[in-house]
Image (cartoon, rainbow over the protein chains, first blue to last red):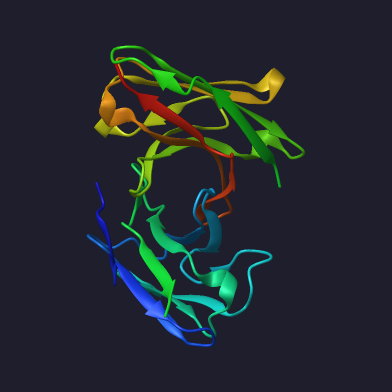
Amino acid sequence: DIQMTQSPSSLSASVGDRITITCRASQSISSYLNWYQQKPGKAPNLLIYGASRLQTGVPSTFSGGGSGTDFTLTISSLQPEDFATYYCQQSYNSPYTFGPGTKVEIK
Amino acid sequence: QVQLQQWGAGLLKPSETLSLTCAAFGGSFSSYYLNWIRQPPGKGLEWIGEINHSGRPTYNPSLGSRVTISKDTSKNQFSLKIASVTAADTAVYYCVGGRSDSNWYWFDAWGQGTLVTVSS
């Protein structure tokens, strides 16, 4: 199985801040990397697929990058509704695996 | 985009069989790969398996032979069964629609989730 790791596991930031979350795969997955946002009690919501492609309806403050084994999710200006947990997920091969999550909290 | 609504028993005893069903509304059911994903309380996401357009299932080896995913195209529904459950199967279970284009594959339709608790 491909193992996914994320850093940091949590971070505190203020509205308007720029933040970056890192995701690493245990082997090369090309650009088969997706990002999801999950709020408490809700299902995850797709933000980015194919490492850098913004899902329809997702604000342009979100962006993704990377390929191979190292990936990033950047929020250019945190909004109050962005405080949530973020997961990366590889779709290179099954079993499809997720990172452990990064919780973004209000400072 | 398809909307997913799921249902099933929320409280099981050890050794019983977990059974959940998911119905799709308002979209092209046949264009989706049909997945189940679970999340233990306070923990991360685990992919259980999927069934593709032609009805072929693929399962996560971590669940061994206990898992069965099936679909009923005439009803736009798909189902999950996990046999011989234990407390380790306690989780919120999501039915999830996956889509692909010529290159990428992603999960963009999620059910509301069902908390399944296994307890004697």
